[in-house]
Image (cartoon, rainbow, N blue to C red; front, side, top):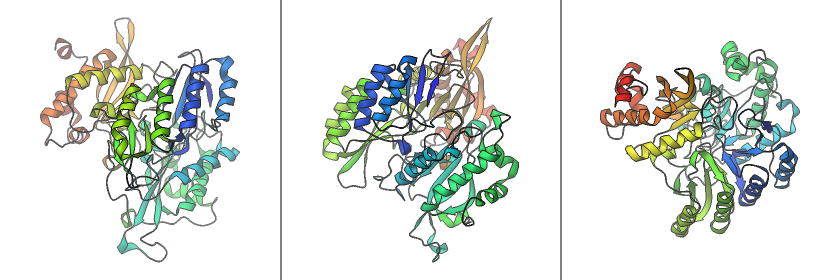
Length: 496
């Protein structure tokens, strides 16, 4: 989990493991001290409900690793060609609409990976996610393996498949950076079957993934070459029984939809009188002082639990509804907030070239410039996801954003300047869609104004007031959108 990240930084980065994003106030305090003493004084929440340390000097690396072990935090097998942090519903256990608590499954998968050597050294990185039907999306359809909680429709129920039992549908091959979502396999699993099936899927990939071309060394490409039927037949060779096949239309998912603002603000728990708070972290970054403050809030007002999310922020659960106003003030004292504009709530950015050798631009800095500009110039009344990613690895999943930006270098005279290609109309879950490119080679300095024009065009031309930005883009041709949006690096735009 420890990587030397030159030439971006003359230091190490350490990626951790928090299955389902589960951590607590004790660990947060310890991490804050380690960040101050051995790192750059900050921690970053990632798009896998995880944390990263940066700015670690070579002389401090062993002290950091032993310090993490003292806190009960695992970093083993958290990088290179391994299985990444196992994600799950961040509101598991207290979500009023969840079908099942996914924390036990995420923990079991996490420990299975750590304790089976053949789960390491894959052809390429691998992502696993469990969605329990809660109000916040886990983006399970962007994972190599996605488990989606469902129930059998009453009219399709039987003794073998009772209507009151929760099952999981199996999805495989998600990798939106390569423009593909996980595909439903037609397979229905009981909860206790998920870990053995996931392990079998990984072993088939281990044996058959392409190690000659890293661009195609992902599960998607094995599935493309073989098809689902052949892959699942190989998986069954590692299992004690055949997989159970049930039609997708025989199942039903969560009763309510995903709440796109469910990770921000105060929301009721299923425990009477209790609420959770979604804390806004600017592009996922926290200082050591802020981490100590968040730990204190979790302990003083809650149970001490803290949940990391795929939206680069965190939740503090088990708060008393009567304490909400006091807690709001405590959060604001830390320089953080419990509320956000539609722009900031859906703002996602990868590490960028300030800490990653692959990135072509400073995504986190540019994301904040974009948010500052848009908050000052336009008013969004619908959720908006803006994703900035620094390279083709698409850690920030730019193709599923309402607006997605992928970094590039733009020739200006004899110089190569930081810039972006821009795509729009991406989505996940019920709005599943790969974004379509509308602009190329937009200078980073021009990106805020370019996005302002795009949003103004949407607000002026949307069919109805509640039409989402992504829905607006999906019903237009690329040519029509380009005409509406006006490229930021065009002569017309510069004159404006």
